[in-house]
Amino acid sequence: MIVDGLRSIGEKLFSIRKRNGLTQAQVADASGLSINTYAEIERGEVNTSIESIMAICRALHITPDDILTEAPEGAASEADVLARLQACSPRDKATALSILDAFLRSLN
Image 1 (cartoon, rainbow, N blue to C red):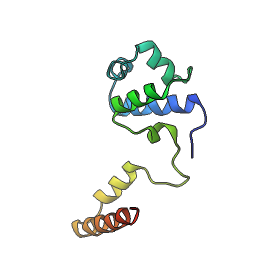
Image 2: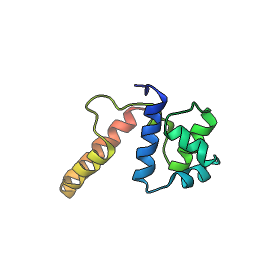
Image 3: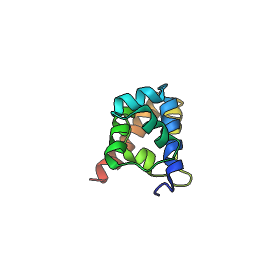
Image 4: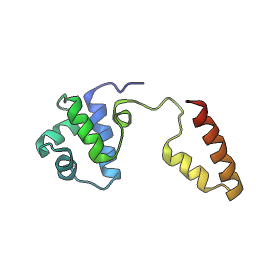
């Protein structure tokens, strides 16, 4: 589902930036944006170009989907999946990987 509103995009950017331990200045610099412009985008105060969104995504090592879409209701986060896998035995991890591999191949 597509995110509704600039504030939602800004909140996602804020969360991802904090999770990566970066400052606004670092993201702005890596994106080729001024700190003021990046801060306004993160606060959801301004609309921005797709070029700026792409530059920010590259700086944060994310895809546009990470900030422009919402996960479906009840969807597991990447952290959830990894935590659940870490709790598995080596044999169960191998089985899960085989199932995931078969699923991903079926998408092509």
